Image (tube, rainbow, N blue to C red):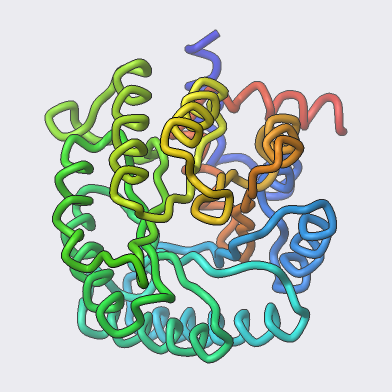
Length: 305
């Protein structure tokens, strides 16, 4: 079956977009800000917070970065106007990180400043290994200027992650704690810098999460793995962490029953709501990262028409 999944993953970019959309719309809120608003209202009404993400990454021209910046500024206006219980996530490569890091910083700084004007929050996503040092540097600069309003993502499968978190402790205080989203990691990296085995990645995820709780850092516990959710419950109990000092996070459209069970137990949960015209690249990348999702495509095509 694995060979079939990999074949579908390889062929997906060659398929007509309207067919791919049948699969993708389960995992993407839509193509417009109105789609994101609709999805966010529905999630809010069911007790979930959201984080809004405009799809796009690895641009090639700074003019694209400027357009993305203006789009995010409009997104913030619309989200706040509609009183959505949510914050914002963004990928630095869509603002020129690998072209001009100073221009990238200025673009993202303007977005964070806009969010701060509404007392809101922006999460800096972590991308592949070529970006890690640059994104930590970017976060450090933003955190120093906007200590309460910016967070960073760490990926547990990267061998360097615990050391990277420790390196930022000088920015941490009880009044303005660090805020990290911890996920497993999605990019294809060499074994020399990333753990590969399922058990190994899970072990380091929980070790990283324990460090976060020990230091009083605020975590977004981003996982759909039942074993990690149960492990997080145990650590929350072990360290007696108040419910307002952490949250679980999940992707839009993924494991809704597990998501509901977390809320039903009284924990807070935030759903990552991606949208935008770049949905096709997002969908194909996610499938390449997880070929097992090919079975979902087949169900979408043959069960949903």
